[in-house]
Image (cartoon, rainbow over all chains, first blue to last red; front, side):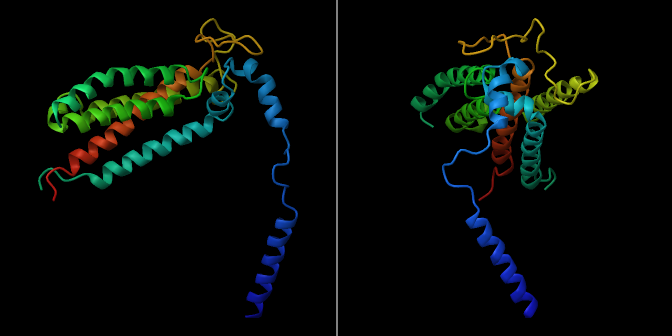
Length: 87
Length: 150
């Protein structure tokens, strides 16, 4: 019981700390990465669309995972809905 | 469904396919890309299936064909990714930047050139094929495997 109370107090302390120290809403955050991509995106990937540059080039590995998620979802649908031929 | 719905669905279908192809191939110039364009084409297929019914479309859509197209898209994606690794840089490295095809875009604001983007158009096409075949095969599976149930 005592341990639970202590754990709760510690947890609440960190939650309150996070709430107090939270980034002000609407304030500009660090933009180093954005600036780099806006400045060098065209030279690095030869594409005008920065979003596509990020999705397919800078974060291409992510998109491979996304395609894998799609593949897994379709495989799951086929496995769940499949019926035996001889039934 | 009625002949009005069937006729309009048949005549809208090519336009939807063209729009989807436009969204896929202009993925490096305008908003959109492989996933979005593939979803448009898959919805066109669903529209045809809803209008004509599965019986009339049976000869034109097959599960094996859709599986083949989806696997082709996945293989193109991985091979293009591995090409960067084989060239000695890193996985998914944009090999084609600086080459004559897809290689160059002027710095700064410009109207956009289709012949740019490095490997991005190829990857968009691969993902587009994958999404078209994948979503169509989900709908086809739902039709095929729930047929005859109460």
